[in-house]
Amino acid sequence: MGRLEQRVALVSGAASGIGAAVVTALRAEGAIVVGGDIQEGEGCRYLDVTDPESVTAMVAHCVATHGKLDIVVNVAGIGVSRLIEDVPLEEWKRILDVNLTGTFLLSQAAVGEIRKTKGTIINMASVAGVRATPYNAAYCASKGGVIMLTKSMAIELASAGVRVNAICPASVDTPFLRNFEIPDGADMSLFDRARSPMGKLVDPAEVGATVVFLASDDAATMNGTALVIDGAATA
Image (cartoon, rainbow, N blue to C red; front, side, top):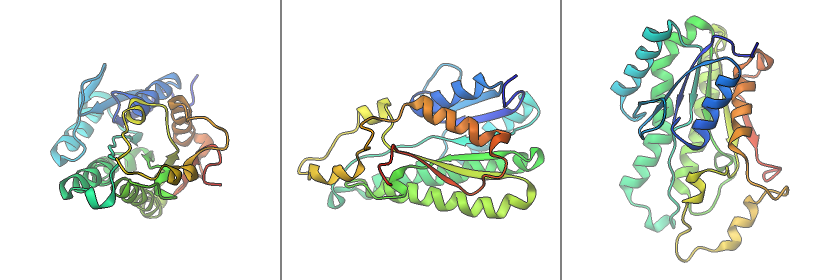
């Protein structure tokens, strides 16, 4: 029997990369998983985390179909690498809307159901929210915000038996990373501080395994944590 047998989980950003790995890991531990994404993906329902109506409809679907909601994993995220003087305002707003406001909106829509099950919310932050990376001002700001949102929700919901944690991966081997473009004129030496002494990227399955741990009873007293997975890059 898996650690999450018969628990119902909702995962945003589930169509690919970290989100898809999280879905696989949760299902392997017995969870019933509903995946949502703005992109098409196998077994995914449409979900726009920046749209309050979309997130409310997704939570309602989970409860109507499976009777409850135990786990929410906020994975949906975007990022663009630019020199600070070249960041368009609309791009800044879009990154914060998806990464930070999207995490807030889905958590807010789900929290009533999560209270009923004394469940858990897991947010995907980043080492970029712990220690800054160059040419990623909007992304760093959004992920730093996710960490503090996580901590605030954890304190507020603890007495209701709800746990809220964040995961802060370093560079994960996903299409998101492989398609990331460094801006012209970038000082490549600034990226040295982000390199893992272990000399490897994070595997998406490692992030999925961490989600399973945080969602399980093995992490029953972990609350308000920003758990770093970075091969000692920020040590």
